Image 1 (tube, rainbow, N blue to C red):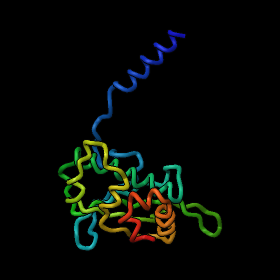
Image 2: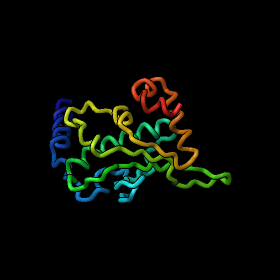
Image 3: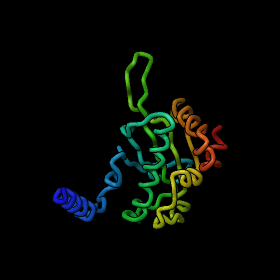
Length: 174
């Protein structure tokens, strides 16, 4: 039994201390849920747009919670590994699985969240205390690209915890 415990401990230490993650070489490599990255103009300002795939395994309010969490993981890596990227706005297009009246599934953009890069750069990500709720409070603009997007965010904001911790964000939704 002690041999198994020792073997498990050695494997765990090796896994945790191993090679570590190599810095991403491209914006798409920042996070496995990024399906594409593009630059564009949003309301007359430069924008870097991350498209997040729908393969997170969640739907509804849980999908939005996880997508905002992924956005909160992407931003510090964008700042750290790609300082030359200096758009006015960073936007996240959330893609959801939609089912048409014939039962066919299709990935489609449902929500776009935009954040001013100047505000994002002020965040102290080093403490690990900045949550996805905090990020939503910094949001500059939300656009519903499909009626399903509005429904997802309304469901998210009806949860008491989300409504409390992302009060400013949710007050504009409900």
